[in-house]
Length: 84
Image 1 (tube, one colour):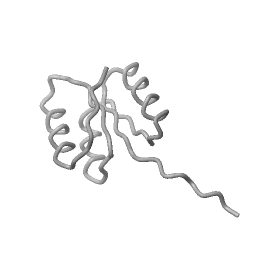
Image 2 (cartoon, rainbow, N blue to C red; image 1 turned 30 degrees about the vertical axis):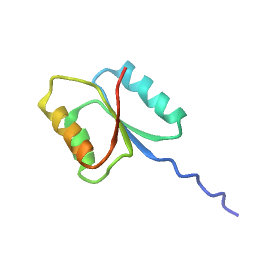
Image 3 (cartoon, rainbow, N blue to C red; image 1 turned 90 degrees about the horizontal axis):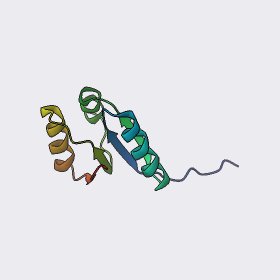
């Protein structure tokens, strides 16, 4: 008999800094999330064309693309968690 897999909600982490990205991924994973990590806005935007996470941590950067990502996430009702 196959064991049922427990549902793990989806989380997104976007950070250019690997240390911060790794730390945030670990914290979300420990809280029960299936975490996808991204180092750049371009790959994040591509992923968001198909998927929507339940929560997201987006590192603050003076990048217009990241502002667009934040607006997309907010428009979809994604809970944004402050980084750091």
